[in-house]
Amino acid sequence: MGYIHCCGALHKTRTYKLAPQTEFLVCEVDYLSKCPVCGHTVVQLTRIDKNKNLSVIRKVNTKAKKFFQKLKSQFIYEIRSYNYSSNSSSDFYLNYNEYGVKKRCYSNLSSLKIGLTENKDLKSIDVINVKN
Image (cartoon, rainbow, N blue to C red; front, side, top):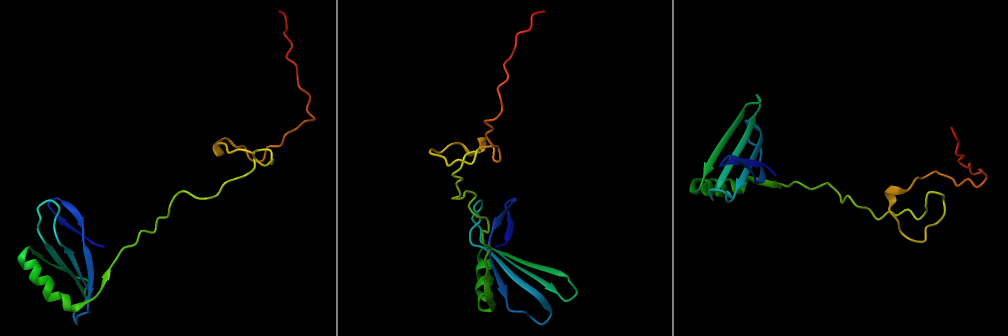
């Protein structure tokens, strides 16, 4: 999916790959059926030749529609972009608390301290009030 600059902004377009011509290495057509701001139809042909020179042909409104119909027979395929981002949530749930004991109820996972062990052998230290 390409972009065309129209009315001070970039707008998403449908991009088509053209059959290769003798003097050009890459030929692509970007088609914007209707600009959301001004309502114009825009077609842009972008070509790169063997010397890596870029040439751009841009048509608007009725000329764009005629130009698009003329080029339509040379289309090989449409270039489509895919959204590779996955859902950020997962189905994983840890069924143990911080002491390795199975939980009986769900609690906040961010408060877990994995790896702690409960030590029952330690004697509690009593705080003694010292008089000055």
